[in-house]
Image (tube, rainbow, N blue to C red):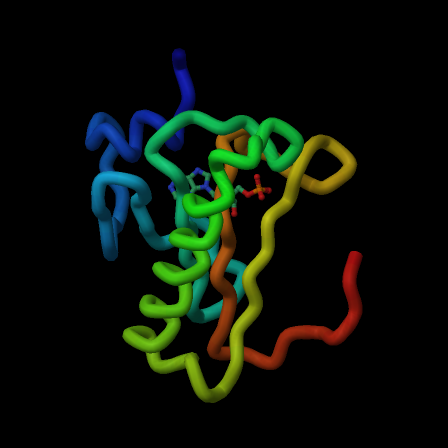
Amino acid sequence: MDCIFCNIAAGKIPSDILYQDEKVVAFRDVNPQAPVHLLVIPRKHIGQLSELTEKDTPLIGHMIEVANQLAKREGIAESGYRLVINSGKEGGQLVPHLHLHVLGKRQLSGRLG
Ligand code: AMP
């Protein structure tokens, strides 16, 4: 399948990879919305939140754990950060491969949407 994030995970498209293991890959967002803007993706193709099954629950926990570790490494663990998953058209999702945004190092608005 011609999925940009599958291709990043497979190393076929270059990206600024910060962490990878057998389950997930994390890299810097190419169009950052904050001084720290990372993406954590599952290696396996999951289109959006609604496609998750109960079997994926440990995977989502692992994605959050990796995000938290990277937040520490980027120096935003104490100042604060935001984890976001956009899902589907009205959820503002542009890339149809599940991804967790990690945003920080600036004051983010308290409002959603
Ligand atoms: P979303 O709107 O939640 O689907 O967000 C998709 C994100 O992927 C955006 O923040 C884009 O800037 C980012 N993005 C798209 N292509 C790439 C790429 N090749 N490398 C890194 N980030 C990308």
